[in-house]
Amino acid sequence: MSHEDETPKGPDTPEAAEHRLRRELPEEVPETAAETANEDATKGSGPGLTGRQRLVQGLWPPRVSRAQLIVALLLFGLGFGLAVQVASNSDSGNALRGARQEDLVRILDELDNRTQRLADEKQGLEDQRSELENSSNQAEEARKQTVEKEKQLGILAGTVAAQGPGITMTIDDPKGTVRADMLLDAVQELRAAGAEAIQVNGVRVVANTYLTDSGKSVSVDGNKISQPYRFKVIGKSQDLEPALNIPGGVVQTLEKEQATVAVERSTKIIVDALRAAKRPDYARSSSE
Image (cartoon, rainbow, N blue to C red; front, side, top):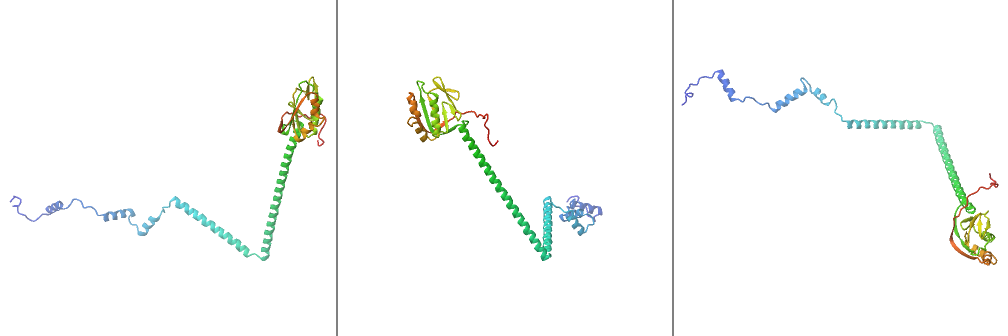
């Protein structure tokens, strides 16, 4: 046995008992979760707050998002507008229900008169539109006719080119026996047969065209041309060719002068020689 066991045990002193308890118990006892939660709740609610105060503290200030606020404003505006509309309709209906029979008849007459006036105005506007359309169509038609007439006059005056069916007459004069009067007879014969446009060797023949002798050749409006003399004529070929070949006519006269004449029909003759437009010295339009 050890020396300690042999030591007699007497009653514990207070200091010895406290020392023994400190060795047997843990140094710290952790707090329970419930106690911690109670302390947090007590700290958050503040000292001495009642249940109603804690409820108010949880509800105010309200936590509203921006989208919820916009939706609330829109719903408020919609409800307000519906309320105003319903009130207005109710007032109008009440006014008509409370009106006398004479007033209702007068209101109906005014509505009928207004409807009739509007119908008359509509008809008047439609009539004006029709007149404008007709006048526009007439003006357009007149303009087209004017342009077409100008082209026709230009063809006769030689200021515009022309094309169409007709004939080509070629006169070969190797001996130079053809004179200006013979060619002038050919031009007049073609005009009498219905020629609408004539061109001789690049010179346009018009109403005031003149032909003169120039040595062994011929001049047309002062422009000297040489043989072979080539006529390009627009008109009805069934009339032009027989007019040249009649007995004692242009072809026989030229052949007597030992000239050779060839006439050919064509469905497309182009007369492109032009004359400059010249204003008459004395003649004026009677409408001026």
